[in-house]
Structure formats: structure tokens, C-alpha cells
Image 1 (cartoon, rainbow, N blue to C red):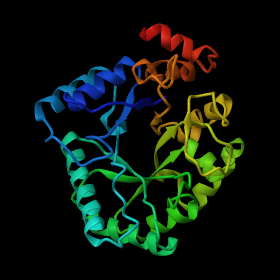
Image 2: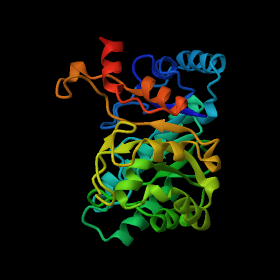
Image 3: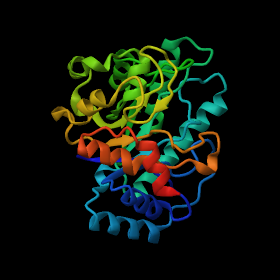
Image 4: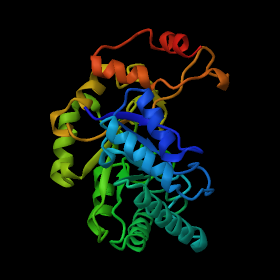
Length: 299
């Protein structure tokens, strides 16, 4: 089982990320190389990176299974403002450069939002942008994330993901997100059927990451609101079947579930659930007292 969660990337950069992942008893993790909502970035510290890589080896974390996530502010789909579109292209190139320095093999990318453009035109913009971003120089592969369909998001079905992959000259991969799949209309009670269709149209070998999230919403809601494992509409048993699917055995599973606490409105009293959710998954046993245990652990 290759399982971990989203972790921070602060002043200690990759070293801090690794230590946080280890504290959750994880053997992989996902991070942003800076704040996902802005462009402020510190140069990668080579010494911190080397120390992080050593700790990964010591703790059986394969760096080839560690995931980076591209910032949310990148939107390759809308080019009405050419300067902003070019900025997204340049910023994505820079994020790939940073991943190469860190030794990271995969970066998850939200394909983008059409905003006021027709979907076909916006899809072509994504293709054109990725063909400008990718020149074969980076060892880090972009993974298109399956999206929920919130607003004018693209990449909400196999056809859109396939069109992008088929028309970009360098290889791309895919990151499945269970909450997004549910909210986009995929019935995860029949996940095996979805995998069969995926294999026919795109190929299972393209899946290099799975975001494991329950959903606060009913199927086909197009809302994208994550819920803690077993507390949402997808359910613990369904998520467990996805996590333990033999066809996806070697694919990293990453938790992006909400922080929890006694008072969800008091941000100083919410805590990461990942240590306990990973424990539930490895034990294959749902814990109805998850939130109480988390509060007790962190108080």
C-alpha cells in the first residue's frame, strides 16, 4: 500500500514535508512548492533537499511515488487575456523546473476553466498551452486531474481527458480524484466498470496518482466538497475497494480530506486527520469516533 496525504512545504521545504508525512505513518505524500493561491516562491534549498531525500530512503519512502501539485492559479484553458495565459504557461514551466531540482517525477494539474469560452475552444487552449510548456527537457510528468465539473471546469469526463492526452506531443498521465469522480457523475458503486472504460479509452498505465476523498455531495452535484473518509456519500467500503483495487496496487493514494476539530469554525482548533484515516484504511476498519480521537490526540 502506497498511501499518504497532502502535507506542507514551509521554511524547511521538502524536509518539512517528509517529516510531516512520517508523523502520519505515511509512505508517500503530496505537496505544493509554495502557496497554491499565489506566485511567491523561495528558491529550492539544495541542502534541505538532500537531507529530505536521505530521510526518505531511511523511512522507505520512494521519491518516485511522491507527488507535487501545480498551483490553483494556473489556468491554461482561457486565453482571452493573452498575458495571463502566457503567465500560466511560464509559471507551470517554472514549477516543473522546481520539481526537477527536488527529484519529483509527477505533478498533478487541474486542466483549467473555460470561463466565457466554448468548451471545445478551451480544450484546444489547454492542448496548445501544454505543447508550449513541454519540450522534453523536464523529467517530471504532468498528471491531469479528473475534475468535479464545478463552474466551467474542464477534464470532467474521459472524453475531455482523452482529447488533451491524445493531442499533446509529450506523454501525460492522469490523477483520479474520488470526490471529483462522484461529483462529476461517476457511480463509484460500479468503480470496476469505470476502470474498464478508462482502460479502453485512455489506458490504466496512465494513472499515476489517486486522490482519496469522500464527498459531502450526492453524485453528479458538480460541487467539489471533500469529506473525511467514511463520513460522506461515497462511503468507507466503496473507498476501500478503490484503494485496494489490484489494478491500482502500485499507484500512490493521497488523502486531501478536511481538517477536523471540536469547533469546525474555530481554525485554531482544527487538526489534520491523516494519521488516523491512514490507520483506518490500513486496518480496513471504519472508526466512528475518528473526530473524538483526533481531538484527544492533538489537545
